[in-house]
Image (cartoon, rainbow, N blue to C red):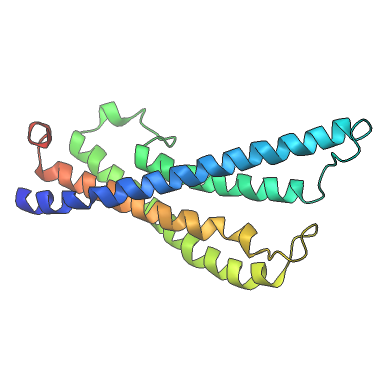
Length: 179
């Protein structure tokens, strides 16, 4: 069985790349948010003194859209790092085997949420989202407002597969063997 895990561990680079890509997207969105918000605030504060510096009408909608991307994508990143809020207060009273089984059940539940986010979110993005437009950007489809949900769902699914694999692997490979 350990030979199987050695083979499967080669996929880890795909998980690492997914993590890096999602992190880069989050960083770019944060930078975009900061720049747009700074420009909008400066436009509101200094418009009387610097007439060419105006708050663009689209700034709020774009900033909120960027924030929705960051919120759901960073939640997916938290899955990979095991940084989500968890109920671990009773873990010390349970057997290690029970804790591992409960972790797998929890991961399956989150995987199910990722599947729902992907399929239902995609349906919303392509139906409701594609029919509407941003108020301040009438040429831009609201698809982009709904798209973060299925995008984060895909990232959650990828990271949950890794988490479930690692939990299953822990049944067969001892800590000393992992190093």
